[in-house]
Length: 203
Image (cartoon, rainbow, N blue to C red):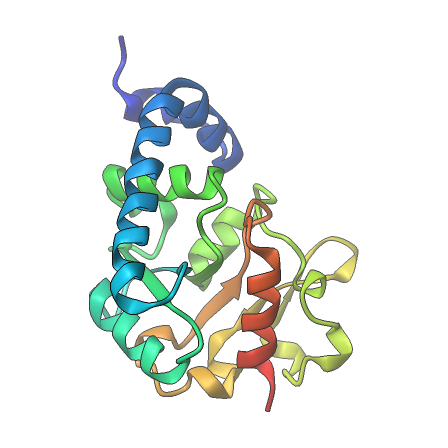
């Protein structure tokens, strides 16, 4: 049987997610069960019931997931933010390690990623597969105090991404600058996403 990397060659992002779910769903369910149990265990100490999951994918600067989570939680104390940092040596999705790519695809398919912050090249690469949802689903475009040149539009001229350098509340985080903030269509906690976007995008 060919290796997973061979099976995924030539597939679109959506096809990869569907393929992994179809053939590895038992492993994924077991992994998600462990994640849920881990979250419940941690929440018993923190007092916070669930995490708001942000995935950051890019080339540089490199920051570890624990540091990023700690820093964002210091600024947004009402949220139990968990950051997953994925390093992309060439600022492309294809340059992400197989293990990290598979992990991201699994979590995306399961709706476990609430918010994405990507290098622009990776955003443009993935957007060809139509995996993102319009940000107008969470916040009215008339309420976006963001310059037009910092908005990434797609179908029907709707906004799918925002340049993070134009979001004042993120300016103190150097590793989040010059990236694109977006949301997977598969994100399951849409109310939480709406609340968080409203918080960080207000003046």
